[in-house]
Amino acid sequence: MSRKSIFLFIPFLLLFSCARSLTLETQTDIPTPLIESLQLNAAIYYPQVTKTYIYIENSRDRSNWSIAAGDSQIALFNEVMQSMFSSFSVIEKLEDNNREFDVLIVPTLKDMQFALPNETGLGLYEVWLAYELSVQNKQNGSSEMITITGYGSSTEGVFSTDSSGLLEASKAAYRELSAHAIVSLLENSRIQALPVSNALIEQEE
Image 1 (cartoon, rainbow, N blue to C red):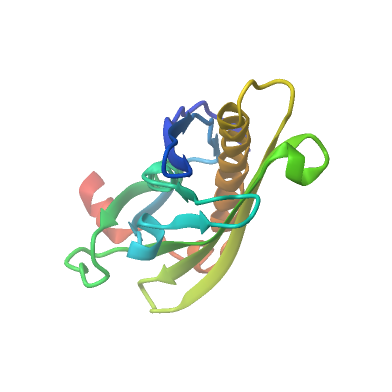
Image 2 (spheres, rainbow, N blue to C red):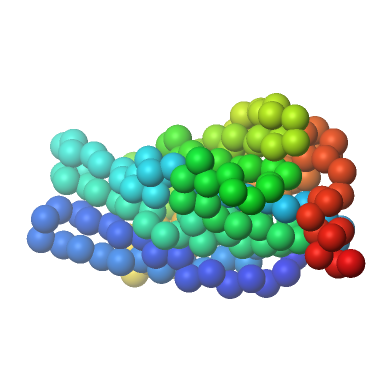
């Protein structure tokens, strides 16, 4: 697997109480497969729970934390899909089957965790993400659920604020997540079993 520098500006909305609002932007380079794009017509559907996922915590140490992933995850998965498949579309509804897709990917954000240096005891900012990917072979109707994760950390002392520390940690977490997504999809048996898309062959002719 090689690396291709696809830079994404990935926004996070971070609220550390009602009086303070910060917007974090990060950029990451997505690793791309060493092979050519798969000659398949793919689609991706983002459930509402994924698009609107917000990490909320109100504890003694974390008063009124609210962290929204925003469009960051959508931008990331769109780039992964574009790097892997010759053709891909984003569908707004699962019923949108007016086009023939070879494979349908549905990513669901299951968990998002953050830690500050005073919490880790190791002088680290940490970000951890977990997704479930539903991989559906549209030709025979079979489906499979796979789990991918991404972890990133950054060292306290390098950054002047918690915002910049979490920014760097989130960048690393997304980079690892994208690598895991690509490897997991390339190795998926339902994707490997798919023949070259007839629709793409017809387009070339």
